[in-house]
Image 1 (cartoon, rainbow, N blue to C red):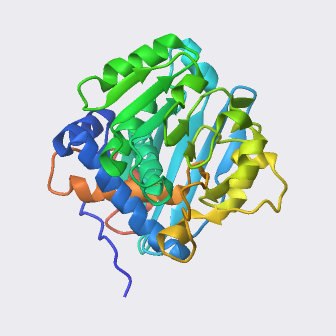
Image 2 (cartoon, rainbow, N blue to C red):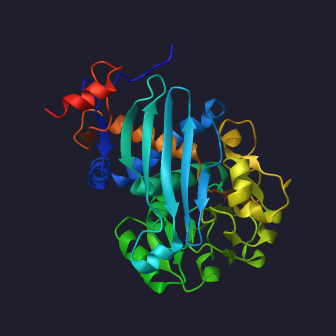
Image 3 (cartoon, rainbow, N blue to C red):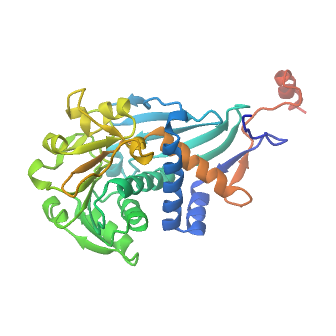
Length: 351
C-alpha cells in the first residue's frame, strides 16, 4: 500500500528559509549533517532502479543556465530549481542559487518547500565524500582542493568527516579565495596548506578535487600532473562546454558517473567518444560492479549532480524538521471546503 502524507486542515506547507536552514545546521552540527546527508544519498543510490530518471531540464543563455531537476520514487516527488551563473561572482552575487520542493505522490500536495543554495553545497559535498569512501585509496589522508569558491569548505569538511582526511592543500587562481577558504577552515582540525599552483596543491595528495566556476573548457589538471593511485573528484564540470581535466587523464582512469545520459552532455566525458566506457556509481554501492581494484588505479568521479541526490537532501530536511521550529507554514495551496467550488471560495473572500 502506498504511503502518503495527509494534507493539514488548512493545507499549509512547511517552508525552510535560509535562516532556518542555518539554524538547523548548527543544531545538528555541520559535520554530523554532512554524514547524515551522505547516508540518505547512499540509501537512495541503493534503490536507484526505483526512481524516475531524466537529465535535468536546462535553459541556457550567454551568461549562465537555469535548470529543473525532477525525480520520484513512486511515493514522493521532488524537484530542485537551480541556476549557474559564473559571472555573478564579479557582481557580488552567488554563482549558484536554488530552492526545492517535495510532494506526496498520492495527493500531489507539496509537503516541503526549502531553500537549497546552502543545502546543495551540503549534498554535493556529502555525495563526493560518500563516493570517495568507495573509490579513494585506502588510508587516504590528504586532499588537494583546486578551486576555493563557495563549495570548497564543505567539500573539505565532508572528506574529513566521512573519509578521514587530515590535511587539505588549497589552490585557486584568485589568492583571495584561497585566503577565505583557509580562514574558514581554521580551527576545524584540518591541516590547511596554501599553495600557489595546481602542481604544488596535488603534491602528496591521494584525493584531487577540482571545483572551478568558469563556464569554459579549461585544463585545471593536465595529463602529466596526475600519477597512479589517486582518486579524482571532478565536480566543476556541470554543463555543455565546461570541463576541467585533460582528455588524457580520462583515458588513463576508471570513470564513475551518476546518470550517463546527463554526464555525457555535461561532464568531463563530453570530451570523449560516445561509447567511452563508464561505470554508474550506484552499481558500485550495491556491489554489482567493482570500484577501486588496485593501488595503482586512477579512479575518477565525473560528478555533475543528479536529481536523486537532491531528493535525498529534501527527504532529510523533511525528517529533521518534524516537531521542530526550523520552519514556518506557507498558505500556498487553494483548498476550498468543497473541492468543486474554487470560484465560491474566491467570492467569499470579498467579505
